Structure formats: C-alpha cells, structure tokens
Length: 401
Image (tube, rainbow, N blue to C red):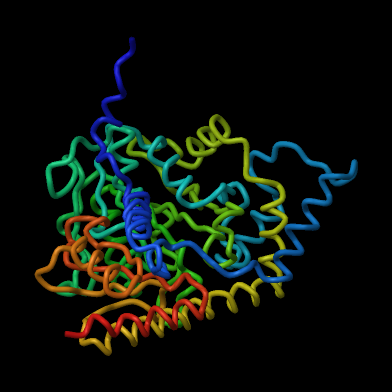
C-alpha cells in the first residue's frame, strides 16, 4: 500500500476554524439553552445587495439561452479583467496581468504550487493560517516545533513594533506573505512602511505575496489599498484580492490575482507566464455566474453597494471596539478593518476563548491560532447581524471583574 504524503503528516491535525466550530458544538450540546453568538469566523452574514444580486441572477438566466450560454472561461471574462484594472488600479494592468479566480484563499494555495517546495517562506506573525499551512502542505516547511513550523520565518508584528515586521529579519530569495489590512490584527500598513517593504524585497530578491482581501474597508485616504501604489512593487510583488468581503461573495466565490509582467525569476524567466501555465493546467476558470455578478459589482451602482456593505460591517466593528475598550482591554483594528485584535496579557488565548464562551456565550478566535505572536490575543470579527453584534457587546460586560 502507498505511504501517506509526509507533507500532510507534518501539518497539525486541526485547522483553526474547524477546531473553533468543534468547541462551539460541544458547548452548545452541554448548554442547550444558550443562545450563542459568533464573532469568530470572518464569514459575511448580510444579503448580497440588489444591484449586484441582479447581476448574478441575470447571469444565471443567460445560461438557459443559446445566445447567452458559455462554457469554460479559463482566463476569466476579458471585460471583467479590464474593469478590475480600471476600478482598483487606475487601468495600470493589462488584462493578461489580471487572473480571475474562485477566491483569494484558493489562489494563495495555487501560488504555493507556483514557487514549489524549495522556496524559503516568511510570514507576518500573526497571520492568516493558510499561508503557513499551505507552505507545509507543499513541502516548503517541515513539522510543528511546538511554537511554529520548522522552515518558516516568522516575523513578529506586535504592539511594540506598531504591527509592522523587522525587515532585517526577512530571508533573502524567499516569498513573504503580507496582508494589509491585516487578518487577524486589523492593522493597516502605511505608505512609508510599504515603501520600506518594497525596498527590502528588491534588495533581498524576495517576492511579496500581498493579500489585499480587506482593502475596501480602508477609510483613511492616506493609507494604501494596494501594494502597487508603491513605486517598484511591480518588480517584486503579486497581489491577491477577493469579492468575498466587499460584495458578500464568500459563498459565491470569486477573486483575482495580479501578476505583473515585470516580475521575473533570478534567471530572468517570467513569473506571469508560469502563473498562466499553472492556472491553465489545474483550473478551468471561475463560475460564469459569479463573473457576471462581479461585473455588476464594478459598475457605478455596484461600487456604491460594496461601499455600503463595508460601511455596515465597519459600523459593527466600531461597536465591538468600543465595548472591548470600555472594559479596559487594549485593542487595535475596527476602524479600517472588520477585525478587532484584543490583548489579554499573560493569558493563554484558548483559555480566554473558553472564558468568553462560558460567560458571554460569544464565540471569538484565539490569537494563538494565527501564529506564536498571537498568544494572549483574541480576534473579534464584525461579520454578523447588527442585532447580534449589539447583544454580544452587551454580554461582553460580563467579563468585568
């Protein structure tokens, strides 16, 4: 019989969010009377707004006609690629630099395949778990050491360094996963910081994988939404983005990745060409229905609806942040991000998770699940119905004393 893939054997058994769901189920079974509210997983809850929804439904109807039917669209609709470039990047990217996908998380997984097992990997710490877990699954990192995975360079982002890493620790000739606005901390890198990041990446031969999935939540006009607002980024960065959080497409599934033609390997080969080859080999393109919905999201009315939806969740984030701060708990995020990162000094994150669940019947996310530097932190998510958010904020008062 064949042996188990050693890369899968290296990964910890439980992915963070299924483990949270398991603990929630166990608590609910033991406390059937409890009305549990989730401020944990970053899953949108509000209906897709009417104009964007109409794009989806009319797109589905087209498939029932001879004139409107489409099969594979491997590269994505040309019009959608052009519109993404226009709306988000001032038209600075050609359609063949914009790759339509079934979501940012899926593309991050495929990017692991692009660079392969022999590439050094660095991540912000804390960071979205798929950066690390995907690296282990592809063989770019080894087993769990008790605090992290062997072969991953963890660059701490804490209150002490303003949630921006010490770039002198960035490995040469590596890929570096960087998320802004950050999941889980909610911190947003400013223009000076991103300029330093691009400079360091170019000096060290590092490729930045810039996760901009929460960019549409940025309300401060002085904060960059894209790494490509920084001069020189086209030569050292790939940007991944998604319609999940701004348009409510978490279940619809649609995203995109920007791979500039200026980005080259050490030998001068094109990263863009390799990414096109990988996508054409293992991916048959995003749902046509989802792409029609995205086209609606990127016209004037759709952009307005996306802003309305993000503003709604930011309003909820503000309520959570105020509730947490009223307890004397230090936190960041919740202003240009839907996440609030709260600190419980000296305490184990899972212990705090259990206390909040027991006392408040509120589900959160333990910070340690995002990396070693997340220990003693809790992430609150603003994705929830407003009435539930308000009730959860009232319940958090039970943590006093």
